[in-house]
Image 1 (spheres, rainbow, N blue to C red):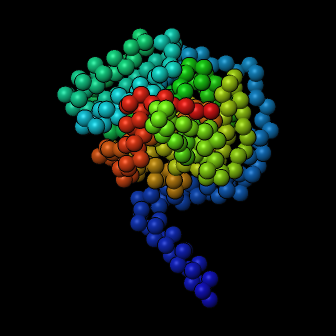
Image 2 (image 1 turned 30 degrees about the vertical axis):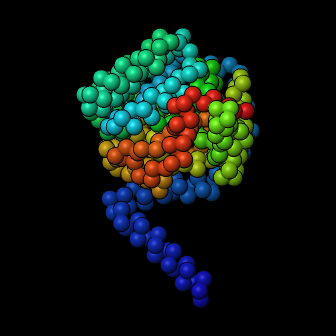
Length: 331
């Protein structure tokens, strides 16, 4: 009897959850067959991915790649976070990169002018970029940049989550993977290390690549592939079905999915879009690849207005270490 009551309670809870989002109910029903199809056929797709022969002839050129970021700075703390983030992200990046870099800064005048000078100083290796000051929400900004992009692939980078190990060779490897697994893997998603050590004596941030986040979650690994010196784990997507983050994807594919969410869910709120993606309402990514020797850190200890997370002292400790020049040591 207890098990029946529990089952009824869970069913009730589930139905109420759907009814509370009445405007999404129709989309949920529409996409339900697809959701069920993947649920029951995912083992077959897993097997296809595991057996796929990697092409040796697929090549990606640098001019097929777009790097972009979109942010709004509203405080000195956020400005400092952005500065340290960009220093790490572009530390190993080559000035000879042949692709395009777009930065959309929605900050108010004072911060925009300061950001412009700061970004120019950080990218002092003569890395060329285009900086625009246009008021737009995060989804609108992504849409504006990607819709007009002629590049086949894009890389988005956040202003508070530095990417460690970002190079042109890595980007070429990631884009080649997306070309090889075109019908299966939709995104390269960067992950955090699940733990790290702040060695104050030697001024090092010590990270083991064995502690990349998906491993601690015990996500079932479908396959590991290697392009050059870079390894990638291919997994079922354990994030939101659609999301905004540090990632690499196929431009047109992501842009089309984003257009659907902006039309049917929300034009301004990235979180409403991601929650719809989590419920598998709308077009989603079923598989992702996670780099195993390139990763991101979280320096976000003072959140933006749109953030839903609680600010944390752990991130502040990490930020202070990065700011004080601690070497990021990983292997």
